[in-house]
Image (cartoon, rainbow, N blue to C red; front, side, top):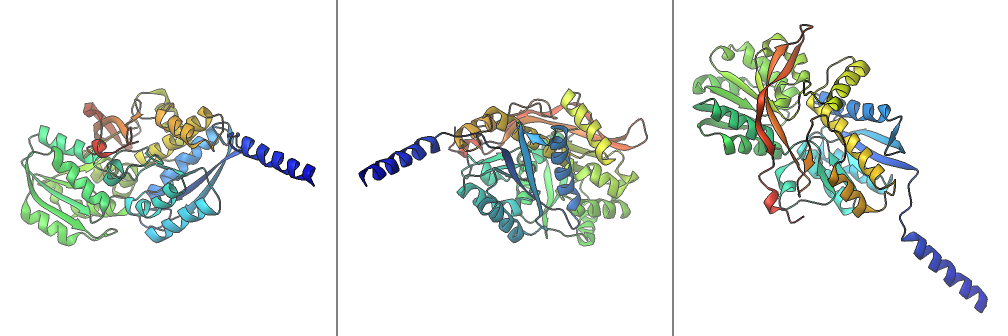
Length: 393
């Protein structure tokens, strides 16, 4: 009897000892939640396609491990997104979560990731609360802070001496962040600041208000189908003849160009990335994306691709030992990968420090409408406005 007890204690001791040693996993499991249906599906599709392109170019692996990517549609519904996060964390026990386009959906699901100590790598949504006091060691923004494109647009409007601007965005966190960002750097007069229903597609009332206000510039944050519809209606109303349209990068990207057409020629926008950035990683990405999907990539695609490359670098950096969360966090923060945007690094709050450029929609050598970067960065090595409130170091 005594011998059996001793054997049992030795067995428990061995389990305790070896259980404390992180072992290399045989695969990396990723829960990918995004908007893949409805008017804004093009954004999630681009993120998904670019992410999976990076996996394919890596031979189906990330960090040397087989990549098991489980993909789900959040249907543009926060409650569905939350349920999917919970399923991936509790049932599938994924190593990473990613994919969400919209801040309201991500904020609904994010507590599931943080409570379970599962890393969420955002290929788009990066709301201001998570950059400041609510920052988390388990959240990384691989895109740009919600305010940043708009800060760059505000700076450009100020530099160009714009005296009056009409501002329009949907009434949710990212919409509020966007217009706050524009106003932070814009020194002219705000003719109106209007918040619409998220998902709104008819802007006849707002266009009538714009006509009456007669601003020099209209600046909007209207991602996906919202922006495509607004620009079509803005152009059809003839307002572009008297009023300049300034956009954040995603408001004048390839998905919007495809939807609107020739009227997009000459529109200016601000973004952290462009197809013509001259680094080798970007050249490869643009060529491979067009080859694989027979369309030009958007900035959403660029962010999805970089997210996969970040996972690849971090998993490789820990030798596949995915249970060592602190070592994995350090590797994620180090961001040892060749980004398609060129210089890229994380700040202490896990939000990026990077350049933001002015782009203009022009015709390329094949006669296609594409964004071209104009001059030097509008904002160089730019960090977000909330990092000082984040307790992480």
